Image 1 (tube, rainbow over the protein chains, first blue to last red):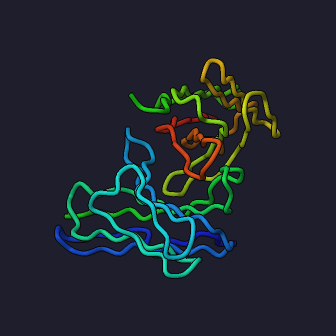
Image 2 (cartoon, rainbow over the protein chains, first blue to last red):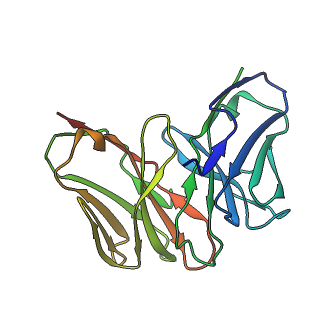
Amino acid sequence: DVKVTQSSRYLVKRTGEKVFLECVQDMDHENMFWYRQDPGLGLRLIYFSYDVKMKEKGDIPEGYSVSREKKERFSLILESASTNQTSMYLCASSLYGRTPNYGYTFGSGTRLTVV
Amino acid sequence: QKEVEQDPGPLSVPEGAIVSLNCTYSNSAFQYFMWYRQYSRKGPELLMYTYSSGNKEDGRFTAQVDKSSKYISLFIRDSQPSDSATYLCAMGKAAGNKLTFGGGTRVLVKP
Protein backbone atom coordinates (compact mmCIF):
# COMPACT_ATOMS: atom_id res chain seq x y z
CA ASP A 1 0.00 0.00 0.00
CA VAL A 2 3.07 2.24 -0.34
CA LYS A 3 2.26 5.37 -2.35
CA VAL A 4 5.14 7.84 -1.90
CA THR A 5 8.52 6.24 -1.29
CA GLN A 6 11.64 8.07 -0.19
CA SER A 7 14.79 6.10 -0.86
CA SER A 8 16.43 6.48 2.56
CA ARG A 9 15.04 6.88 6.07
CA TYR A 10 18.34 8.00 7.60
CA LEU A 11 21.38 9.44 5.86
CA VAL A 12 24.69 10.79 7.18
CA LYS A 13 26.86 12.79 4.80
CA ARG A 14 30.00 14.88 5.09
CA THR A 15 30.21 18.63 4.55
CA GLY A 16 30.83 19.42 0.88
CA GLU A 17 29.42 16.16 -0.47
CA LYS A 18 26.83 16.15 -3.25
CA VAL A 19 23.71 14.47 -1.88
CA PHE A 20 20.81 12.96 -3.79
CA LEU A 21 17.43 12.36 -2.17
CA GLU A 22 15.05 10.29 -4.25
CA CYS A 23 11.27 10.23 -4.19
CA VAL A 24 8.96 7.95 -6.18
CA GLN A 25 5.16 7.95 -6.25
CA ASP A 26 2.88 5.31 -7.74
CA MET A 27 -0.36 7.31 -7.86
CA ASP A 28 0.20 8.96 -11.26
CA HIS A 29 0.18 12.40 -9.60
CA GLU A 30 1.27 15.38 -11.66
CA ASN A 31 2.46 17.55 -8.77
CA MET A 32 5.44 16.74 -6.58
CA PHE A 33 7.01 18.74 -3.76
CA TRP A 34 10.06 18.78 -1.52
CA TYR A 35 9.81 20.23 1.99
CA ARG A 36 12.18 20.33 4.90
CA GLN A 37 10.87 20.14 8.45
CA ASP A 38 12.72 21.70 11.39
CA PRO A 39 11.65 22.14 15.03
CA GLY A 40 10.02 25.51 15.56
CA LEU A 41 10.01 26.29 11.82
CA GLY A 42 7.50 23.73 10.56
CA LEU A 43 7.46 22.62 6.94
CA ARG A 44 9.17 24.89 4.42
CA LEU A 45 8.85 24.41 0.67
CA ILE A 46 12.14 23.94 -1.18
CA TYR A 47 11.08 23.12 -4.76
CA PHE A 48 8.04 21.79 -6.55
CA SER A 49 7.11 20.47 -9.97
CA TYR A 50 3.83 20.43 -11.88
CA ASP A 51 5.06 18.28 -14.75
CA VAL A 52 7.97 16.29 -16.13
CA LYS A 53 11.08 18.41 -16.68
CA MET A 54 9.35 21.32 -15.02
CA LYS A 55 10.44 22.85 -11.70
CA GLU A 56 9.72 25.92 -9.64
CA LYS A 57 11.46 27.41 -6.64
CA GLY A 58 9.74 27.34 -3.31
CA ASP A 59 10.48 29.50 -0.30
CA ILE A 60 14.00 28.24 0.50
CA PRO A 61 15.66 26.95 -2.71
CA GLU A 62 19.20 28.16 -1.96
CA GLY A 63 21.72 25.33 -1.88
CA TYR A 64 19.31 22.87 -3.51
CA SER A 65 18.35 21.77 -7.01
CA VAL A 66 15.85 19.24 -8.33
CA SER A 67 15.34 16.90 -11.24
CA ARG A 68 12.16 15.43 -12.67
CA GLU A 69 12.92 13.28 -15.72
CA LYS A 70 9.95 10.95 -15.21
CA LYS A 71 6.47 11.66 -13.89
CA GLU A 72 6.80 9.32 -10.94
CA ARG A 73 10.24 10.43 -9.73
CA PHE A 74 11.35 13.71 -8.18
CA SER A 75 14.92 14.07 -6.93
CA LEU A 76 16.31 16.66 -4.54
CA ILE A 77 20.00 17.47 -4.89
CA LEU A 78 22.18 19.17 -2.32
CA GLU A 79 25.00 20.55 -4.45
CA SER A 80 27.49 20.88 -1.59
CA ALA A 81 26.07 19.72 1.72
CA SER A 82 26.45 22.00 4.72
CA THR A 83 25.66 21.45 8.40
CA ASN A 84 22.70 23.85 8.23
CA GLN A 85 21.06 21.43 5.81
CA THR A 86 20.74 18.84 8.56
CA SER A 87 16.99 18.30 8.65
CA MET A 88 14.04 16.02 7.97
CA TYR A 89 13.22 16.09 4.24
CA LEU A 90 9.69 15.27 3.16
CA CYS A 91 8.51 14.52 -0.35
CA ALA A 92 4.83 14.90 -1.28
CA SER A 93 2.64 14.50 -4.33
CA SER A 94 -0.84 15.63 -5.34
CA LEU A 95 -3.22 15.49 -8.28
CA TYR A 96 -3.01 18.21 -10.89
CA GLY A 97 -5.42 21.08 -10.59
CA ARG A 98 -5.53 24.79 -10.18
CA THR A 99 -6.64 24.34 -6.59
CA PRO A 100 -5.26 22.09 -3.83
CA ASN A 101 -8.48 20.11 -3.69
CA TYR A 102 -6.96 16.83 -2.79
CA GLY A 103 -4.25 17.67 -0.35
CA TYR A 104 -0.86 16.04 -0.38
CA THR A 105 0.29 12.47 0.10
CA PHE A 106 3.59 12.48 1.95
CA GLY A 107 6.45 10.03 2.08
CA SER A 108 7.88 8.88 5.42
CA GLY A 109 10.73 11.35 5.26
CA THR A 110 14.52 11.21 5.11
CA ARG A 111 16.39 12.39 8.17
CA LEU A 112 19.65 13.82 6.83
CA THR A 113 22.58 14.62 9.09
CA VAL A 114 25.53 16.55 7.64
CA VAL A 115 28.71 16.27 9.68
CA GLN B 1 5.57 37.38 11.02
CA LYS B 2 4.68 33.93 9.72
CA GLU B 3 1.73 33.58 7.37
CA VAL B 4 0.32 30.77 9.52
CA GLU B 5 0.70 30.66 13.31
CA GLN B 6 0.17 27.55 15.40
CA ASP B 7 0.93 27.00 19.08
CA PRO B 8 3.63 24.29 19.31
CA GLY B 9 2.32 22.86 22.58
CA PRO B 10 2.75 20.27 23.91
CA LEU B 11 -0.92 19.87 24.75
CA SER B 12 -1.49 17.12 27.31
CA VAL B 13 -5.02 15.81 27.97
CA PRO B 14 -6.51 12.78 29.74
CA GLU B 15 -8.07 10.03 27.65
CA GLY B 16 -11.69 10.84 26.75
CA ALA B 17 -11.21 14.62 26.85
CA ILE B 18 -11.84 16.98 23.95
CA VAL B 19 -8.71 18.19 22.20
CA SER B 20 -8.95 21.71 20.79
CA LEU B 21 -6.38 22.89 18.25
CA ASN B 22 -6.25 26.10 16.26
CA CYS B 23 -4.31 28.17 13.74
CA THR B 24 -4.43 31.81 12.79
CA TYR B 25 -3.36 33.17 9.44
CA SER B 26 -2.75 36.55 7.85
CA ASN B 27 -3.33 36.00 4.12
CA SER B 28 -6.95 36.48 3.09
CA ALA B 29 -6.24 34.68 -0.22
CA PHE B 30 -6.32 31.29 1.54
CA GLN B 31 -9.45 29.40 0.53
CA TYR B 32 -8.59 25.76 1.32
CA PHE B 33 -7.85 24.58 4.83
CA MET B 34 -6.52 21.21 5.92
CA TRP B 35 -5.38 19.38 9.00
CA TYR B 36 -2.64 16.78 8.89
CA ARG B 37 -1.62 14.31 11.59
CA GLN B 38 2.02 13.28 11.94
CA TYR B 39 3.18 10.42 14.11
CA SER B 40 6.76 10.30 15.29
CA ARG B 41 9.22 9.38 12.51
CA LYS B 42 6.44 9.33 9.90
CA GLY B 43 5.26 11.70 7.17
CA PRO B 44 2.09 13.78 7.71
CA GLU B 45 -1.25 12.26 6.66
CA LEU B 46 -4.34 14.22 5.64
CA LEU B 47 -7.07 14.24 8.31
CA MET B 48 -9.58 16.90 7.31
CA TYR B 49 -10.15 19.18 4.35
CA THR B 50 -12.43 22.25 4.28
CA TYR B 51 -13.18 24.78 1.60
CA SER B 52 -13.95 28.37 2.65
CA SER B 53 -15.82 29.01 5.91
CA GLY B 54 -17.95 26.57 7.87
CA ASN B 55 -17.78 23.30 9.75
CA LYS B 56 -16.99 19.77 8.68
CA GLU B 57 -17.38 16.65 10.78
CA ASP B 58 -15.83 13.23 10.28
CA GLY B 59 -16.30 10.75 13.10
CA ARG B 60 -14.60 12.12 16.21
CA PHE B 61 -13.04 15.02 14.27
CA THR B 62 -14.60 18.43 13.59
CA ALA B 63 -12.91 21.16 11.57
CA GLN B 64 -14.08 24.77 11.70
CA VAL B 65 -13.07 27.71 9.53
CA ASP B 66 -13.84 31.35 10.32
CA LYS B 67 -12.48 33.37 7.42
CA SER B 68 -13.67 36.68 8.87
CA SER B 69 -11.39 36.11 11.86
CA LYS B 70 -8.70 34.25 9.88
CA TYR B 71 -8.95 31.40 12.39
CA ILE B 72 -9.32 27.66 11.96
CA SER B 73 -9.88 24.94 14.55
CA LEU B 74 -9.78 21.19 14.89
CA PHE B 75 -11.64 19.38 17.67
CA ILE B 76 -11.06 15.76 18.61
CA ARG B 77 -13.81 14.23 20.74
CA ASP B 78 -13.35 11.25 23.04
CA SER B 79 -9.58 11.44 22.60
CA GLN B 80 -7.58 8.21 22.63
CA PRO B 81 -3.89 7.54 23.34
CA SER B 82 -3.58 6.70 19.63
CA ASP B 83 -4.41 10.36 18.90
CA SER B 84 -1.04 11.35 20.42
CA ALA B 85 0.77 12.97 17.50
CA THR B 86 1.70 16.32 16.02
CA TYR B 87 -1.15 18.09 14.23
CA LEU B 88 -0.33 20.47 11.39
CA CYS B 89 -2.69 22.96 9.82
CA ALA B 90 -2.19 23.78 6.13
CA MET B 91 -3.74 26.30 3.77
CA GLY B 92 -3.94 26.83 0.03
CA LYS B 93 -4.90 29.74 -2.20
CA ALA B 94 -7.59 29.81 -4.85
CA ALA B 95 -5.17 29.06 -7.66
CA GLY B 96 -2.13 26.86 -7.54
CA ASN B 97 -1.24 23.79 -5.59
CA LYS B 98 1.19 25.00 -2.99
CA LEU B 99 0.24 24.64 0.65
CA THR B 100 1.50 26.76 3.54
CA PHE B 101 1.86 24.87 6.80
CA GLY B 102 1.70 25.87 10.44
CA GLY B 103 4.51 24.73 12.70
CA GLY B 104 2.44 21.94 14.27
CA THR B 105 1.03 21.28 17.74
CA ARG B 106 2.22 18.25 19.65
CA VAL B 107 -0.64 16.46 21.43
CA LEU B 108 -0.28 13.85 24.15
CA VAL B 109 -3.34 11.88 25.29
CA LYS B 110 -2.66 10.15 28.59
CA PRO B 111 -4.43 6.86 29.45
